Image (cartoon, rainbow over all chains, first blue to last red):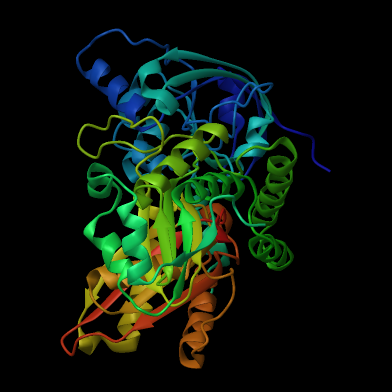
Length: 185
Length: 327
């Protein structure tokens, strides 16, 4: 039985560099959420050279927009959204210090190239496991773009969030390796 | 149990109706009865017509929105369990384990199984002998969605396609109505997530493309979708008709209990063949490699034009949510 591999957020560089595509990790620490609309705004602010409402350096961004919390809970279901919609914005965020992304589904060649260049990883959460992931979230607050509702930027404290290293900092890509291994055509 | 507003009303023969109407003032007559109301009095034979009040439609839609988002059907759960047994990839098995665990947690904590509680697609099969009373049917459906998404703590994901400003209450719903024989109304609510909806495609094939062209297009759509739509998926296919008919059939195919084949043996055979071909791609759970990419393929067909061959593929993630009620 292998030991549970913990990955901390914000990232610790040695930890990040030791990750290999195919590793299962459990995420602990503080992450921020951003999806389509928030990415668009961050991208525009970066392009205009304006200050961001959040720090990007060494951060972990989770592509997610949670359900509202029912009374007594801190958050509703909160699984990952499709990462490829963020691909157009991602290289610029990586250039500004973003180190890890959590989402679901493959990334573009351009994103992987930037990940290798700036040393970042892409972690896959299980799409559709929104309730399971919500149970790993211990603290939530809106930190920017509150007007975007579910698309606002939230800061979350997570504990042992189960993730799979899908693309590591050397560009090894489980979305290519995995299907090739099991294809029967 | 009947709803308080549901009752059978006896329609008066014409003469009785006249006496009945004369009890109203002229103003009330103008406002209380439209010309279509008069037409209902005209048939000379006594006739019953079932009435359903719009408030019952609203209550039902609200309830179905919540139920569909919290609990996936036993059909899907059984297929996920079967998938877990069949999956050859350890990562894939682990993912399927997490999905089953997720269903348990969602049920236990009363949480939506997926945070993408979708755009509400509502199918109404309205019996031709039913009279909907008390207001606007479509507004009643929108109100049910509004209430269900608010009271169920479901995510509000609907916005203007141009300004991208959220409507704030997940309305409007997408409403499909069909008139069918009988005196019942069947309501099916499908909260459709867009991770999978985005990966759907429609193509107007040429007759020369034939069956091979159909198979190729279905398979290519699934391959192009890859890990994006949260596999294992359910694939809804509409073949034939016109452009919009094909798309409608593809969506409607997803309403079938997951894994139930078409009654047409030729189509059922195609479903089985496509399921195998899709599972041979190696895409696997979440696109990370494996032997289970789809749980089921459902195909609907309709005659088409001599010049055409429309094919639509509507992809549904493993959170294949739909709940129905009969009024």
